[in-house]
Length: 47
Image (cartoon, rainbow, N blue to C red; front, side, top):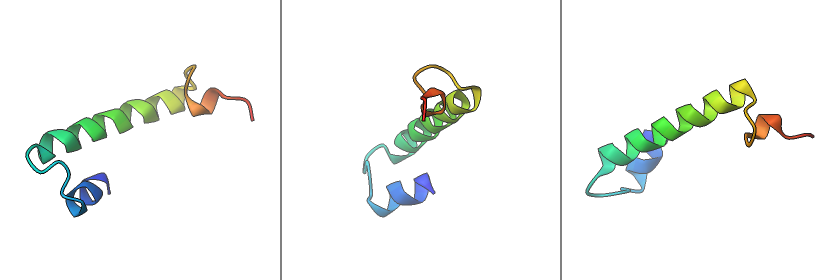
């Protein structure tokens, strides 16, 4: 899904592959933080 969105908007035109990898790494790290309920993640905030 992320790759498709970036490709649709042709962003960034000169380093698209590197940008996609960076976004995927960030998403993975954020997902792991949410799963573990680390401080600063949305999962650890009171509702």
